[in-house]
Length: 228
Image (cartoon, rainbow, N blue to C red; front, side, top):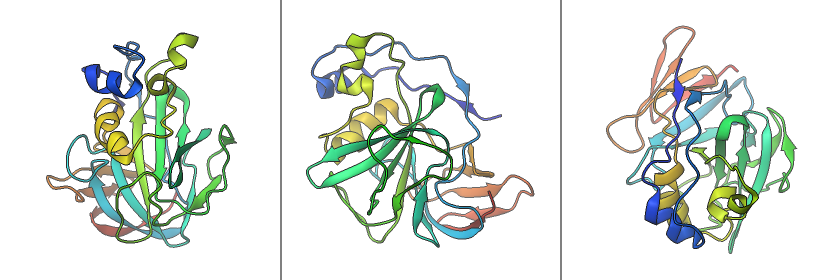
């Protein structure tokens, strides 16, 4: 069973600088089993993945993977609470799940969920796109799907902090994909998502997706069928 490890050590100055209100963060929750999570789109279709990479595509933990499903529709892969992260150019979406897992959805257009909305597996979030609400870049419509581990919130004072509460509104893409990703990014490597085991490659935008039921391997970038 793949383990879901909290990544809160050495958060220190970077997150303190971003929050502007704290010198440290709450202690990490104990590592727990990574949840049985689906892929962020409907089963029964072909999907293209540009491969596993860091949130900024150049350095740091490889917590991101790009997906382009045939039906162009992004869906919640697990129940949770959706949040809209606001930037000057629009919004992007995160979902908080039980156990401290947060999933992120960048580049989406036509977002249909609202901030604080409870979502279920399969709830439509929006459409793949080329939106750059906080900055960044894109070369074609897709969803930039990310994994995060949030710190435990044990007091209301701590939850008032943007970092601790997970309120990342107003933060630039450089901040989110750099300092926050280093602090809270959860590696895609070794995670089973939607019946596929993902393994990162040496290079950015590479890796493999192995279908768990029969061991079939898809090299990334590449296409595979999501069976749910």
